[in-house]
Length: 137
Length: 59
Image (cartoon, rainbow over all chains, first blue to last red; front, side):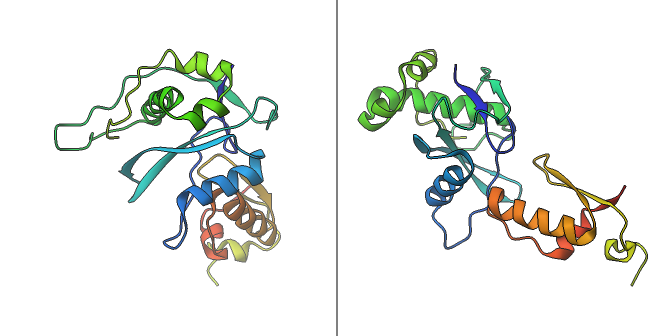
């Protein structure tokens, strides 16, 4: 069953991206170094926090990778809703994950590459998420 | 050097904890080396010796 895990355990994994660096390259490179080759690296949302712009990524790795890392089941959450023209004022990590997985569920249906790399188990989990690709977080 | 400066604690054991929960204990040199490696390898960040020691607590 897919779980949340990473170099910081189930806590969000924060990376710094330099002004001359490509965020996707940084996330992919560090994921590869610390977790092994990722199956999928996908940016799902952005928000303003910690005095910076935070880009959120979901990195999918294989079942046998990084088995030593502490993981937790993926919990559902209510989305942080934006106003019509303003960003949500408060966004929790679990809401970022909820949004990211809804985004991924849409990609699993719409994007042939994502559909190919995700396992049937992943697709089964994502089937329970309502696709919502354009929600601003 | 002020007595509150972690570098002035000699061989005292220091504890430094990263925001992500990673922590390391050792001498000033040891915790600086370990936290600089952790910052670079896990968070793609550069940390100076002063930044690491500013987080240090004697244990």
